[in-house]
Amino acid sequence: MRTTVGIIGGGPAGLLLARLLHRAGVDCVVLESRTRAYAEQRQRAGMLEQGTVDALRECGAADRLDAEGLIHQGIELRFDRERHHLDFPALTGGRTVTIYAQTEIVKDLTALQLAEGPPLLFGAEAIGVEKPESDAPLVRFVHEGREETLSCDYVVGCDGSHGIASQAFPAAVSRTYEHVYPYSWLGILADVPPSCEELIYARGDRGFALHSMRSPSVSRLYLQVPNDTDVQDWPDERVWDELAARFAIDGDWRLERGPIASKSVTSMRSYVHEPMRHGQLFLAGDAAHIVPPTGAKGLNLAVSDVRVLARGFAALHRTGSTELLDRYSELCLERVWQATRFSYDMTRMLHARPDGDPFDHRVQLARLRRITVSPSAAAELAANYTGLPLPL
Ligand code: RFL
Ligand code: PHB
Image 1 (cartoon, rainbow, N blue to C red):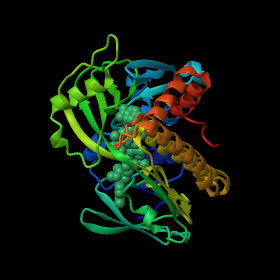
Image 2 (image 1 turned 90 degrees about the vertical axis):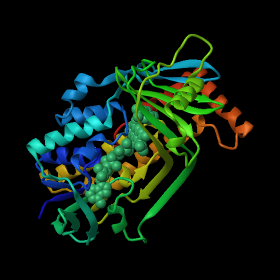
Image 3 (image 1 turned 60 degrees about the vertical axis):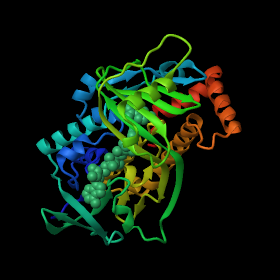
């Protein structure tokens, strides 16, 4: 098999890149190790920046998003049993965010690609990238029990946090940066209408909790739990009691309970792989960087990476210029580090430290208070949360 751009991974980054390249007239092939059913039900993100929505619209993949996405004008911060609303349009000059599940984006992009191309192979596991420095790199992969080769002009690793593409970067050129957080999130999906209109980020002595949603009838909620938590120790009743305690305020508000459809624990880390390009091999999305979910940046960063990359390939195709592709790593890393800083700050401001350090606690409260009394502090949070501009 031969193609111009070989894409490893059919998550949001790989699928959107394929769609953008297809529309720019650049041919590509997507290899996805999992089955379609698995890839379409993997519970992940839910909050989309304006730029992410725009990108999906521009490539004709937003019909359902426009019909079913929930536009949010802000978020609520809860601490000290009080609630504080942040009004994004007022703080950012009109920006909003949209709630639409990653599972649905993957379904929408997969359906379009299977109908219109380019080729998308499920059950195709890449096992190595060879000759990334040459102008004819290869992807070795296993499909239906046979080992095969995809010959490319370029390879893009969109293969997530456990991918193999980054392993083809020589150790001498790779720099990695990592921070592991001393807590995890227990996430539930519940068949109950959300108890709020907008997302609630709650900080209390018992730990952090987040109330998000998937639709007017499905809620998504998260609880800070210790690392190595076993979901078996969290029967439904205990989850709801703990959520209710963490969201409690002085005043009228009630957390509605309902059947829990799924429950899982996710650890949290920050990770950046530099550079994001070596020779003819590029990394995009979680393959290049991981952020803790508190800032809701992971999917949005994956989308901004592939927008830059697609413009670079389109320019190459149209004019023969590699200028944009040559600046890909530098352009993306600026935004990646800003999102890394924001996610780190949000995480540290909202989670209770396992050692219960009282000094740290007071500094967190001072930070939260500052956001509620200072319009410029609130505007800084809103600008980062709704998304910094694309570096183009
Ligand atoms: P993905 O989604 O992991 O997709 C990678 C794909 O590559 C495939 N793959 C391979 N295919 C072929 N050969 C191989 N050797 C392969 N190895 C892997 C995998 O099967 C998979 O299909 O990475 P991508 O596309 O970069 O997308 C990144 C996002 O998934 C991720 O950043 C977000 O989900 C993070 N995230 C959130 N991001 C947001 O922007 N907003 C949010 O609200 C948000 N909430 C979250 C989140 C992540 C969470 N978890 C579970 C970590 C909430 C949670 C709980
Ligand atoms: C989600 O809806 O899954 C979600 C929303 C915001 C976050 C993290 C996760 O910060």
